[in-house]
Length: 522
Image 1 (spheres, rainbow, N blue to C red):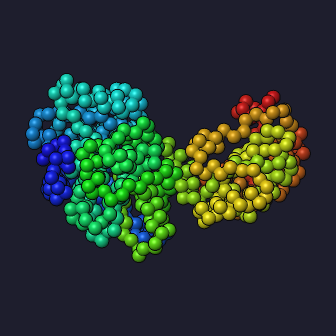
Image 2 (image 1 turned 45 degrees about the vertical axis):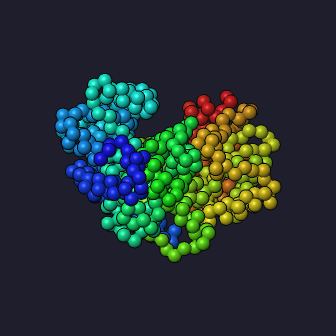
């Protein structure tokens, strides 16, 4: 088999299928990889009205499908050059796949990784037997160095996706999937460089051509969609890095040639929609996917909802590939912050309210009992206050429209920030600062019980008596929520009886050093 390209030179779709089909069916990947389960997501299936199945490539020894393509490629190298050395560049799953494959086959492997690669990933590659060389600050620099190193040292460069042998190895995912469920209507596949999508698509169309093959990309890294629109691979100027496993600027040439033959459609999704899919996977299967790993499920959900909003079809059978679970733990903080927005279960607004006693309570009453999920505010003037507020939604866009109308009818000036990336990523954490004048202020940290009415109880007890000068509240779904609140009052003794009457656990933090440094003018 030509180890560079088949689709570029083959005369027909049938010829392409035959060549790839043979490689996929005879692939030796199971000397290193395992057949992964196909799990049904019962909760999500019920919610969408369609059967949703997840192909669990996070169950591979390296927690990613990349092992398949790497082993198939290296097995060919071993047959042709038993004593060869191999070189690749990667900061993620390809690196681990090559390292483990080389170890299994007795080959010497050097993996070039950017110097910015987290130590946990470097250690994982070394533990699998790879010789790690750190070079450059980004993948492109590391990749160029790896190619040069292979040329000067007579080693064999192992590409991450644009290679027929790598593509064939990835195609074994489809072979398993169709044997596990042969009544599928559509299969959703994540797309970065396109190796997984290309290998699976050619196999699916060879065996069950009626099954739709749908590639899924992040909106900010949609290199396949750009290539489909242009009729040829194009290089994106920049790509988003949240789903770093698919943050590829240019689709592979062979991958694109297979995609334009065998991929039916490309769906793009936002980072928030990916976060929502990560949460769905956890809720249904208690598995934690990396962002790129949840990409295909995010596309499945978007496709399903779009289909349901047009002509309601009979219940469909959908499968998506959970492509990997090599997640940086810190990413979970971002995911938990954004998943509700991705599901349209939360909206965030900037609202201007009068700077007067009871103003916040009246604002909450305007919302008709809807739960406040977040409230950020710092006294700024004697006339008006700008608040950053999150609101719980139960009925998605329809309820969001209702909330917008309620705010308009009540005369509030507001902005819907639910789709404002800058606001969600940065501004929400920067609201506030020092007041414009020195205040007589007492500041307290509260533990709010997380039940409907807890916030209104707070406002009814305290909000009509003193001007609230500082408020930061975020509901994270735990049994209690942490609240920081300031009041314009001379001493603790003046407000103590009301705080005790409130019944919430609290402590005075007016002398806290960080508060004194960043939130006061004194």
